[in-house]
Image (cartoon, rainbow, N blue to C red; front, side):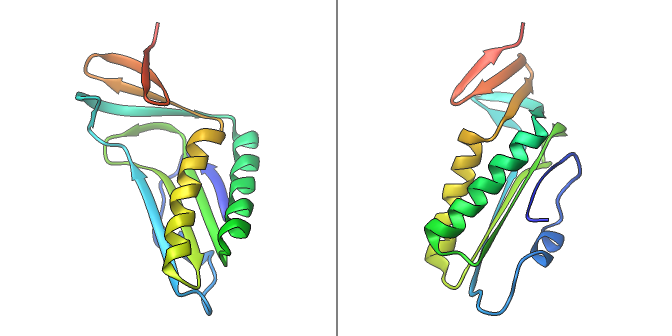
Length: 142
């Protein structure tokens, strides 16, 4: 299962078990987590909403593009949804390559592409209210 959206937490060890060994010399892992401060305000939790079918399809497209573009051996992309308190994992991307440079570049590129292309919406529940996050903007919930 190399691409998935889930309410369940991640296990990096489980994720690595889906990826090949052998000629892979580099595994670059990005694990995003809910932080406790955003825009100078205390965060209580994040709420992620997702259009699962479309999100999975777009994440698979990003995975395939990354493999071709960076010459990867493989890539894994998992994203959470639902209510996630501070400290919970939100996204996991693992790029597998014969060499570290391509793996680092691909991992960063894939995380950015997921944020821009995948239909996942994030709401911050903060000490000063609830805000939908769009790019660098926090839009108050009505």
